[in-house]
Length: 547
Image (cartoon, rainbow, N blue to C red; front, side):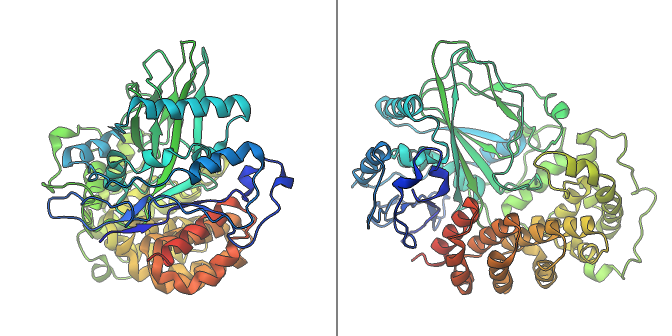
């Protein structure tokens, strides 16, 4: 039968409630004394036709467990928790998940978003909107606490269309991030500038491979006059606003229940609300917990359709598609380890293409072209990376929410897969920390095919550079090796940088049951001073000990 994975734990004792509730109201904490546990990420067995069987609510222990020992709630929040307690799982079975098909997945890879509909009754969505209206008018924006404040959002998050799209894009067992937000656009409010969201309490490289996604939900009808969310299709692979805004804007109007799943790095904005009504959009964040080994969608044809894409970034799109299929080797099909003798392989003049003066799409296509050139391409990309990491360091460090390893050549080395690993291991031994940090990040983006890099990444967890430790800790989670568990556990409780502890906890969550030896450290991390370290530790413990 199916098993459920705990993916989010909401505890009213967390500091995120401090902007809503007086601290005197929380006189109880005893371990995990009161929790709302949302069970909405599933490890599911697929049937041959690509669909998933009916999910029995009791078998899944659906959506929430409330531990009420010594729970004292301030009056203005107790009604929400009471509604949650009185919101039992329905007795009927849920319908099958509605997975995306090949065409929808390819459109997502190209355009960065897909629209689905949570087809509940109009009364359901009106209830969510009315509750949001009341909360905003009385206590203000609840921030992360929009989910416990409106418990029926759990039904939205377990709707077959929503879980099907997220499973297709992020794989079975995806996790909901503890950050979420209800966006209000009041009447006549001007629209925003297009932007990419920062990674909550982190500074990730904006990778092309989809490990993060967002869901935008409308609890009311939103037409083009009402300030809908706007997206720039196919902009998720660009870091420049000027380049992104060359794309034609699409206003995501829709009926109540419209849910748009977007690549985390898609450029978007709230448009101007020209009406006299409030516009609400509730945003949820989700994270991939395992690298793809096979299609997570209803796949009938593994071939990439050129007609469904276009001409702007064909090599990039095909590379991402192959990664989604679970292909071990993406562009670098030769065994670089056997073909490379130290640093003897040099770059042919034909492959030494300078990136200066190229547009962002041209640079992207250039590095993916080099990725297909075997060892000579690896050498060219490594040479370029060695320059790029130092030349762009000041720019990357000055930019907001930017990892210093945000480098064009890294995408090409990631696309090469295992063939690039020997070159990256050389960079991991560099005297320059920006090169070591970049190598650690790229090895993580390579994922499972970089398995033989694990001992070297483990050594990097003791690097003097915070950025090297951050990127190495994240990389080990993508690779998923139990070999790294003791060192990640030590990092979780010993490292002075909360970003490093954040990544260590999330990587232990990705490793899952094989990280059982880290349970003691994860328990200690439940008292970490940083909210998201605590939440990632809870996620890890839930995945380690799930039945």
